[in-house]
Every structure is written in structure tokens, then in C-alpha cells.
Image 1 (cartoon, rainbow, N blue to C red):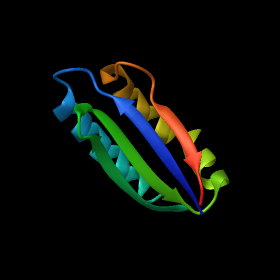
Image 2 (image 1 turned 120 degrees about the vertical axis):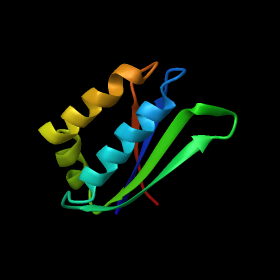
Image 3 (image 1 turned 90 degrees about the vertical axis):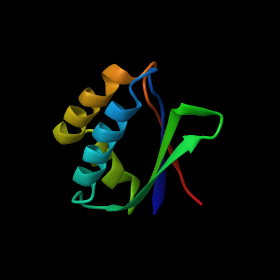
Image 4 (image 1 turned 90 degrees about the horizontal axis):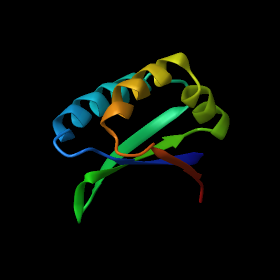
Length: 93
């Protein structure tokens, strides 16, 4: 099992738009082969600094999803409201 940490910085005034887009993206992810679970977090000092921690069966499952047309379409909805590109880190324990 691996975990994927996604870090995003949301533009001022766009939190509700981000929450809607992020929720929609997460709903789509539940049906993806290899996906186990996900949690969303907010920086306690900056409400526009968001994190998503998802668990995947294998790194290959994540990469297949990360490069899929469906995820790219979802990210294209989120990208315009970010102040910088999302940062994705694969971690394991």
C-alpha cells in the first residue's frame, strides 16, 4: 500500500469553488481500481492551504489514475483556482 499526499494552495475567495470541485473529484475516485480511501486536511494557519491524503493499493494504481483522462479533466477544473501547481508526493511506511 502507498499513500499519496497532494498539496494545494487555493486563491483567495475560491474556497467554496475548490470544496465543490474537490468533493466531485473524490466521488469519482471511489470507483477507481486500487483506490482505498482519502482524507482532506487544512493548514491550521492558512485556510487556503489544503492537503489530500489518499491510500492506494499500489503505486501503479495511483499512476494509472493520475494519468487518466478522467483525472486530467477533474484537475483542469481545479487548476485555475490554484495559486501554484499542485504538489504530489508518494509516501509509504
